[in-house]
Length: 52
Image (cartoon, rainbow, N blue to C red; front, side, top):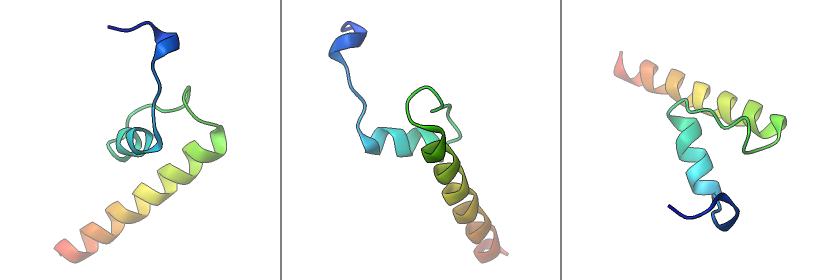
């Protein structure tokens, strides 16, 4: 595995981790964490509505 200083995470990876309720607190600013949680909570609520 490469050393931490030689790795990076792109925005797609961050969004995917957030979508599946992963911890991104150490990877992005708090406002980004908040907004992504809101976004995926809204999407989950919409999916539940359409499944009913």
